[in-house]
Structures are given as structure tokens and as C-alpha cells.
Image: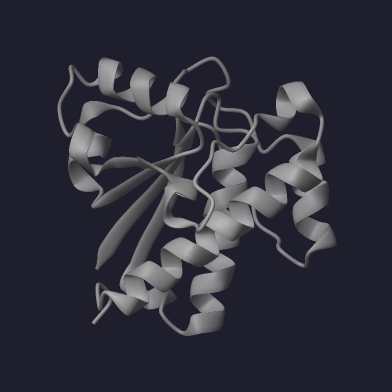
Length: 154
């Protein structure tokens, strides 16, 4: 089983959106049983909170449903996941710092797998949940295509 974690700052907007989008795509591709999928924050400030309502709303508008409770990623979490996909470079920098500089090679930006590498802007600040959804969907789709193309799920 391949373990994939999505990470943003608070784990209430982008990373749980990515978790649910990626799970939906994996189910449609028939590979969800080969994956362990979860999401985390680099911070504990939202720990215990659910997905932010505007994030849930945009997911439901695309027929994607689910729930998640925010939690901070720790060193043991980093150790057990094969791929850790952050939403922006700041998340990568902070996560690497949080875990003492270890395992930096397996922490990548989600949208680095797309034809247009970029950060996923934080909709908590931009208020543009549709753009965040589109960027995350693009990244998740490209990452799943990478896993399938590279035969990582065989």
C-alpha cells in the first residue's frame, strides 16, 4: 500500500480538499484500495476542527463529499508516508523545519506534478475557493497519472 499525505498550514482548507479530491479520483480509477490517503497541517492552530465550510461547499458543488478533523503532521507521520504533498513552498519549508530537516526529499509541492508547477494559494486569505479547488484538482489528477504511469500502484 502506498501512503500519500497532503499538507497545508492549518489542515482545514487545502489539504483536506486535496485528500478528498485525490480519494475521489483514485476511486474512479479503481486504485483506492492500493492507497492510504490522509491530510495534515504544519501548525496545530486548527487541531480538532473540521473542514472549513466554504471548502466543503466547493467540494460538494463538484460531487465530492467527506469529512476530516484537523491535525498537525509530526515526525512519525512523515516517516510513515511515501509521498508528502504540500500546497505551497512555505508549507514545505515549515514542515522540514518541524521535523529537524529530515526526509526533505519526500516532501514536494502538489502542483509540481502538473505541466504548470505552482503554489496553491491559501483560500483562507484569498477567499477564492474555486481557484483553490481547480489548482488542487489539477495537482491531484497529475499526481495520480504519475503514480499510474510510473507503475507505483502495481
